[in-house]
Length: 433
Image 1 (cartoon, rainbow, N blue to C red):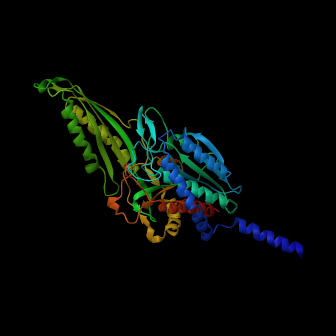
Image 2: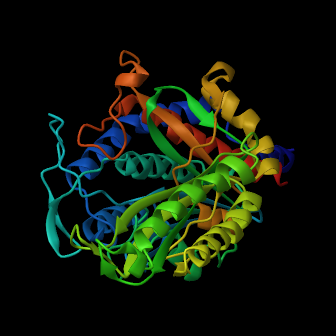
Image 3: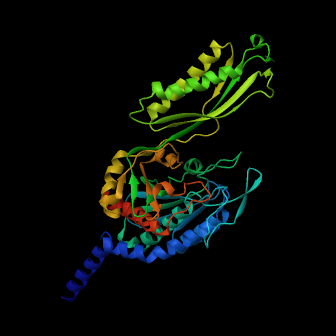
């Protein structure tokens, strides 16, 4: 009889240990870690570091991940940190990502944890600020790691915590960010099945989350056009092959790619010339004009079309003006479309709605900004969300924008981010049984 009771108790405890954590358990853990998440965020905000220079930030994260007993790898893509939670039980591999770098922005907020840090950017000393919320991203991922380690015995599979450098772009002459992490094998050993990420949003109310399937942020494709003509005196334009008037026609024609060749009712696209240089005097027609610009697209079909249309128009206009043209596309870097896998998005939507509340989960329009999270999504299915950070008493049109000296988000918005990362991870692990 005693043996039977012991056996029954053993079965009970094993079953309990392997049971999916309840919402009540996870909510209690989230509440208990919130104060620490806020403290982490304040630390990161006070001591930001620029892209590929996140040395102290990485060391701080490494120390904490090791304290959780995770297997930790450092120096990934120069300063990246990756922690692996292995439950010891078979199952899928879920990756969670946060970016670490600050921006060369002088903070104007009067906060007890205001940044007064300085750094070197392209050879110049600049102020440094977390003006895009990466401080909150790191803190939220650390909070999720805390919870997931606590319930480790109730989970299966493995979880990778990816802290990524240089999301804002590497200094001149360097590489960095998600693309390099992927190249160095961050999605391998163990091989990642899905990846989740999120971004704090300064114009979305605290407590709300925005989502969308398909293209959510645009691909980025910078380009350069050099128009070559023949120099002449400005008083005798018939002796020239004028690259300036040619460039003017090119600029106007490029706008018709979007307005006349792209089906904009399906997805937006942008072709922008951001810089034009040519000549040095009012009375000299120069021999050359250089322009640089950017293309933004939200689906691959539109992206492929613009890649074909832009050089077609440039070369045809140059030929019509007796000039020649050189087109470099992409110029020096490019980002893919940040694309939320539709099947994974459909699978995770009930989790998102349960976590935030149905009324607080908002179907979002895509944006023509970009994110190098897209490099992860090129390799494995991924979901990327926007989590509200705007105080409820601040009108959306008065909320300071990202990448500005006044950028600010409410600490209370981070708990939802922690919960989303935690719940999506657990629900995916158990759905794969």
